[in-house]
Image 1 (spheres, each protein chain N blue to C red):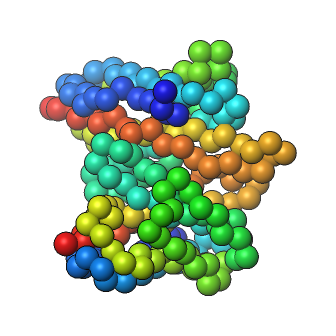
Image 2: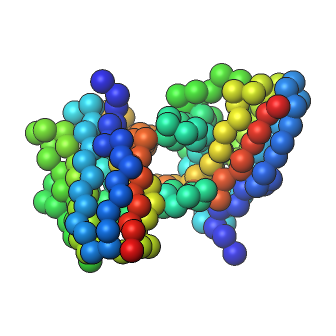
Amino acid sequence: RKEVEQDPGPFNVPEGATVAFNCTYSNSASQSFFWYRQDCRKEPKLLMSVYSSGNEDGRFTAQLNRASQYISLLIRDSKLSDSATYLCVVNTRFYGGSQGNLIFGKGTKLSVKP
Amino acid sequence: DADVTQTPRNRITKTGKRIMLECSQTKGHDRMYWYRQDPGLGLRLIYYSFDVKDINKGEISDGYSVSRQAQAKFSLSLESAIPNQTALYFCATSDIGKQGDEQFFGPGTRLTVL
């Protein structure tokens, strides 16, 4: 099982649609979770962190289920500018608390059409 | 001005040539990383450095070497380039502390090895 797996996509949706991305991770010791956004031929940028209690930032909602080792991202009222690849990212800290490294999923491409 | 810069942005070279990719940052971060991104494979960690005296291998370090010349500079070398090293290379930085998990990426270097 790969460390971080995402829906392969691509997702092609009309403007205004609601779209959900799913991600699973294999290491139960993982401690930090994120969604990054990557535009075509650009660098990845942090979209939002994901917390156990769930968190929302405008049209974006992220959820974490530690028991199922599952992360989700919901985009409501999608805009043309949301077209990008969305990367699920997990950090597994080393024992003792030092920072681990980020493990990136392969990404899911979203295309929002007019 | 960009916080994380990479030079060159594009490079075409021939098999067997030595290539150096450079990364500089003005964020004052201690931690720096080199990744490569290939279609269908996502981002993979090559090397990382938690401070000037610290160098660690990542997932795919074979064929690469790095040098951390200063806190702000981290260079990646391909001693003898081969075609399967054709990829998009990203440098990233992160800080120690509460927000330490977020990584900030440079704009990338597109390398083609003929």
